[in-house]
Length: 173
Image (cartoon, rainbow, N blue to C red; front, side, top):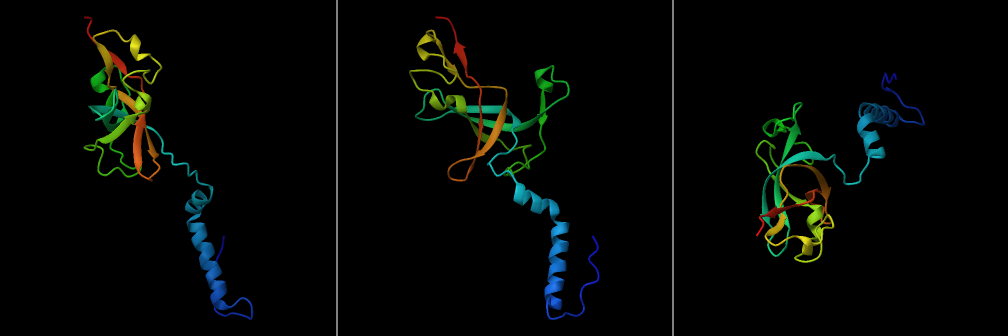
């Protein structure tokens, strides 16, 4: 579109200032068209794309049974994932919800949604009756690479979650 020249005189309606303001607003809107469109048509569902994360460590949650808080680092999957040591590389991207520092060194706390209903009796998150686990065996924390989801909780804070069945570990008595 062609928006020149600015008005140098104004009539009864519109005035020079009003006409120039319209031109300036139209120029701004055209320049920022993508941002305006994203604002109007945006998907504000508290959703960010999931990402692969490597579980670095897990710590039992105090006062809970069969629940752990996991430390996870964002990773990229490699083109040749046939050997564990080459399955992943550290992901240099820290743009999702602006992680506090580079993911080269940052680990985030994450929680396994399957564990939310774990108790000392009843069932595991996948429906396995705990009473069916043989003596000498127990539910163990998840290891490896998981798909992490970033969500906003009821307070507006970002939390990281994933879903993975826990393993059962132990030795025959």
